[in-house]
Amino acid sequence: MDYMITTKQLTKKYKTFTAVNNVSLHIRRGSIYGFLGPNGAGKSSTMKMLLGLTAPTKGSFTIDGKQFPKDRLSILREVGSFIEAPSFYANLTGEENLDIIRRILGLPKSAVSDALELVGLSAFGKRLAKKYSLGMKQRLGLAGALLGRPPILILDEPTNGLDPSGIHEIRNLIQSLPSYYDCTILISSHMLSEIELMADDIGILNYGNLLFEGSLDELRQKAVQTVAQKTMQNTAYNAAQTVGAVPYEVDTVNLEDIFLSMIEQDNENRKQRAVL
Image (cartoon, rainbow, N blue to C red):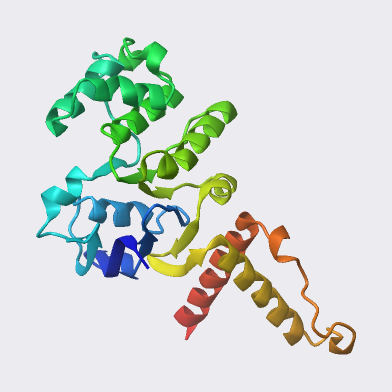
């Protein structure tokens, strides 16, 4: 399997708190990888480690065959990122803000107009950033990540603050990018329905632990098997009448239900371990 990003037992501790615990990810080249988890699960901390914004306490990772920290600069040249809320110079226009990034990256001037067009901000490039709505600021942040069309995108909540129409447009854009210019995308979001529509593979974190990694179909199949096992264990269940039956069709199990059930079960297991 050709992986663009791999992590091996990646761990981040802040004093006594473990934000990320032995996480091993396998992100396929040319895929969209949905990174899911409740607030505080460790998604942003993992992304920050991949970008060199914070150092791992333990573990390692490679991006496009390059090892961190030895190849840090060459890794960063290949990665476009959008982490948490983007910040801009309020008294500069959208174009001017992007031009600062463009010059740092050594890209041609055409990269700014190209990025603005990709996110639907061409008509607002000369507007001051302080006059942008929240949704427009999110688009501008995404434009910054897309400057130069990098082969790797790391996006943390890129649709936050967008209206339904904007969410639809950004989702379609993100979906199109791997085939449009051959990139790999790691994206986190609380909008599970959007991830379900765009992601090829899923990783689910809770309290810093990776609960699941695989394709959406594998996740649905696992959910169906779990439901079937629980049903079989129910003493009120009439096994003779339903031998071989599956409570739900795989295609009808949605990501939100699976995610909530998995997080709830993990939280319950944690409580039981704490009692013991």
